[in-house]
Length: 294
DNA sequence: CCACTAACCTGTAGGC
DNA sequence: TGCCTACAGGTTAGTG
Image 1 (tube, rainbow, N blue to C red):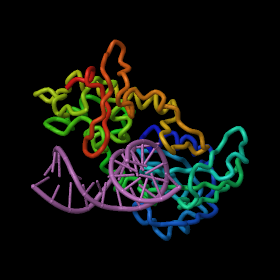
Image 2: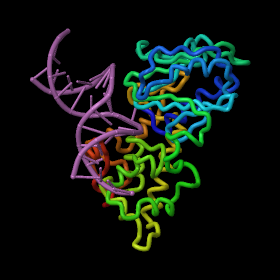
Image 3: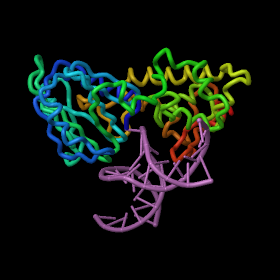
C-alpha cells in the first residue's frame, strides 16, 4: 500500500490527534508481524506522551516524552485508524472496510483537546513491523537509507556517485532504498515516465564517463520530485485499501500516467505511444515505449 | 560490491 | 457458486 506519499498522508492525519496525547494503555492482539513485536511493548509505552509524529522514507516515527522513538513500517497493507472517529468528528468519515481480525495493536489515548481516542493498527498481510528504539541514530532500519527524495540531499550529483558503473535497470535502482528512500512501485514508474526515461535503461548510463551527472539525471530528479509532491498534495493513491487515519481515500490514482494503464494511450502531449506492462525483478513496470528513451 | 530470485502472508479479481 | 491462478502499494535472506 504505502509509499512515501501515503505514509506522509498517514503522518499528517495522525499528528493532530497524537501529538500531546498520553498513551494510557496498549493492547497487543498479535505480536507476529514481519518481526515479532516485543512483549514488553505495552508496558514500555504506557504513560508516555507522544511529542511528535515524524516520517523518514516509508517509516513513521512516534517520538515519545521519555526520549524513545516508536518506529512503524506499514509494509503492504498496514494502516492506522481511529475507532469511533466519525462519532468524535462527524465532519470526517470512516468506512470500516477492514477486517477486524487483523487489528493487531490498539492504543488507548487521552488527548488534552480531543479527549479519549482509540487508535488501531491493522495489517492483513503482516509485512509491516513496529519497534521501539532508545535513540533514532541507533535504529538499524534507518541507518542505511538514502536521501529523502524531497530533501536537498537528493540531487543529480549525489545520484551520479551512487549510480556510476551500475548496470541494474533504472526501475530497480529507484526501488533501492539505499539510493533514494521512499519510492515504491507506483511512483517509480510514474517518475520514469515524467523523466522520459525507459525503465530498462542501465542506471550507470545516466552518468558521464568523468563521473559527472548527465542531463537525464536532472530529468530523473525532477520527475521523482514532481510526482511525489503532487501525490502528497492529493493525499496519496488509493488502489484497494489505502486510507488516511480519518478513513478518507487518496486521489492521486486518478492522475496516474502509466501505472496500471497498460493498453491506454500515453498522456504525453503529441505522443502516439501505448502504455506497456513488463515485469522487472518480479514486479510490474509500466511505461511508454515511444517517449521513454533507452 | 552487484544483480537477481524466492520468500514472507492474506485477500481479491478474473478465467473456466 | 466454486476452484484455481495470478497478482498486489515492501523488504530481506540467500545465491551466483
